[in-house]
Amino acid sequence: MPDTASARANTGIGSDYLIRHATLRQLQLMEAIVRLGSFTRAAEELFLTQPTVSIQIKKLADTIDAPLFKQVGRRVVPTDAGREVYSASCQILGVLSGLETRLADLKGLKRGRLSLGVITTAKYVAPELLGAFCERYPGMDVALEVTNRDRIIERLNTHTHDLYISGQLEEFGNEIEAVPFAPNPLVLVARSDHPLASARNIPLERLADEDFLLREPGSGIRDAILRMLHERNIKPRVRMQLGSNEAIKHAIVGGLGISVLSLHSLILESRAGTLTLLDVQGFPIVRRWCLVYPRNRELSRVARAFLDFAAASEAELRNRLDAALAEFKQNGRSRAAA
Image (tube, rainbow, N blue to C red):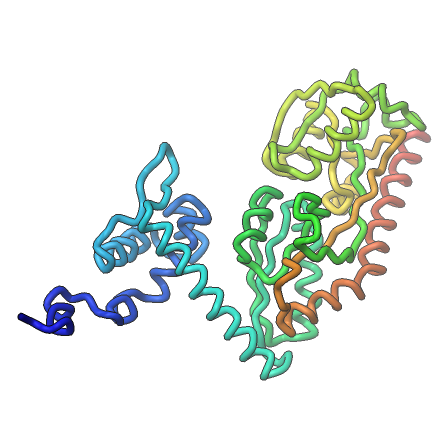
């Protein structure tokens, strides 16, 4: 009768079989596909071709001798074996990320890596902030993902990034730390020749007669404006839902309606004169950008340095907003005098 070691050798399976045959890249792909629900999106995120991703996942499936994914509608979902591999992949990648962080800490801030998840509207703030940070610490390697609020919540749950730039995420309660670092006023925007452009102290109820342009479900700004109107028993007349702030701005210029946007997204338009801010009661809605991270997660020295850097940048960010507001007001006075 063959001994156990011989049997393992004959079947090709041993206690170190996965160590010898599975690769870290395959585990990284596994994590990305499950998280994103798509081979294509995983390939894009990791800068690979889709055939390369498919080949690597097939090799991993062959290694464990079980299918890892099944097709459900337009999404791919993990099988039971796939869920086990995904869970192990997250743990292994997390351990390696922690090791990378500790090694970077040993080197101080001369070199290091920072991974940020940024809610869509904060893309008008994050790049400039990151640029200034990298100028101070030129050895930094920065990864930036811009996505909507729902996906930021997903990323938080899977500990994908070091830090997240978002508004308050009340659903997490005490599970997260949210450190405010910049004002984020939400303003009511219309085309510069809108009939209400020169009006002052407009009652909120007057907006019931206006066509609204809203972001897609899952947007924090959408949730904020709908909640505000609901509290005043105002049912907005939603003309169109759009997937980006840029699309909304173009639709406003095209005369399709009004919308609520972050003032940060209007810095360039403050000089162009194509858009105006309506003086409506209750606006601006005062919110804050926060740097968010799980409470039970120890921040790397790099992440902590960025947190402190962002907090020290608040005055500069506030000055930019004040300048934009002054531009809008000046444009409004010029139109009224014309």
